[in-house]
Amino acid sequence: MSMQKKLLNQKDEIVRKYKSGKYTQPMLATEYHVSPVTIYNMLRLWMSPEERLAAQKLFARKISYPVQGRLYKHRDSIISEYRAGGISYRQLAVKHKCTPRMIQTLVASAGMSEEERRAIADRNCYKGTRHWKYRGGRRTTFDGHEEIKVDGKYIGEHRVVAAQVLGRDLTETEVVHHVYGDKKQNDKKHLAVLSCSGIHHELHHWIYRRFGELHPKTMLKLHREFLAAHGELPPLCDL
Image (cartoon, rainbow, N blue to C red; front, side):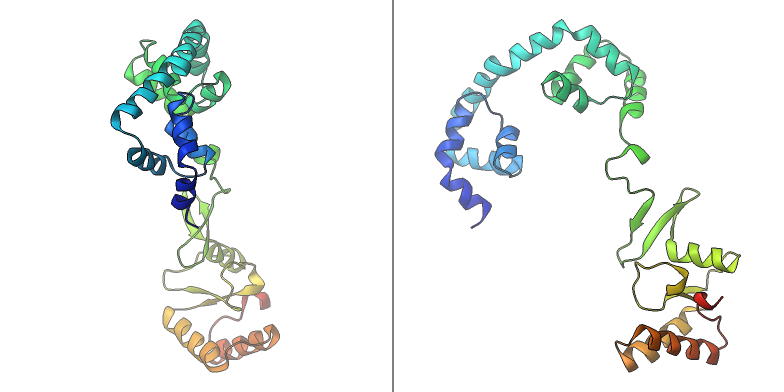
């Protein structure tokens, strides 16, 4: 059953909650595990514009206005806490049991200059290592290779490992090949350095298309034979 059909079965309950003035559309979206856009579109079908406007005004009288009054009583402490840095609108909203928009409006009323607000926002926002999606300077490319950040740039982890084993930087034409075909495994025992992409393509054609899936020991043996026949470096596990 699709999510919209499930919502249709709960139509009366959703409309009743929204008309009660205790729920906003984002609150309903969170409760029913859908996006706010889905709730918005459903309420447009189920309620007239006058009914939706009345529900919004009722929420403002019941919830929003009292909360705003409570916030303005603690206005100075909230603004000083925001100015001190290290806390965002969302964190302040959770702490004071309100919406981030209310905190933003409160801070905007403090008379801070645009430069000061931007400086505080840059200090408080979660960038780089403080971002919630930060993975320790690692990312996965569209073709499955792992990249790590080196001197501010993302470089393939397999190339970094190969350069460390060889004790020199790789040239632009050199290709690092995964011996067993697993791009996630970047230990030196899984890698081999080839002089150019042409040799790399020939290696793939000779081993994988000709022999298919093989035992790891047999795969390593075939790699050694191919690399020796073409005058390439041996697999990094042999260095």
